[in-house]
Length: 111
Image 1: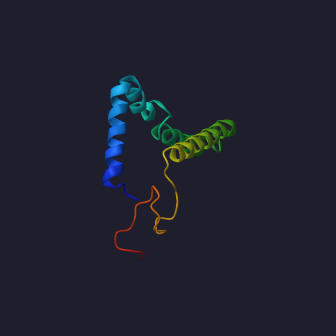
Image 2: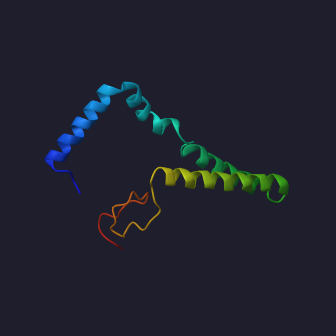
Image 3: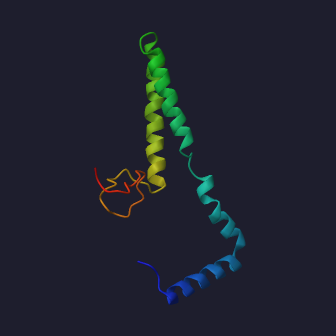
């Protein structure tokens, strides 16, 4: 539900006061998302690397393959945590809800 003009003016005034009163806090709030979490790239690299280790060493060195599998599990857990932290979902893209699904919506309906 969008804000009406009065509510938008009130919100703009609160924001202006916030910027004036404590610029250090404003800067800290701006940097929160960048400084928190490990991101998506590292778990993806770990997942792919773990899979490569499992495939390469499965028949010859079982302990190394087990370490690769452990890396895959830890990376998948970190990736799921990061997706959840960002507010993304793996929900049904056809449900019509306005969630932040990572699946692209089909522009021409269901096939």
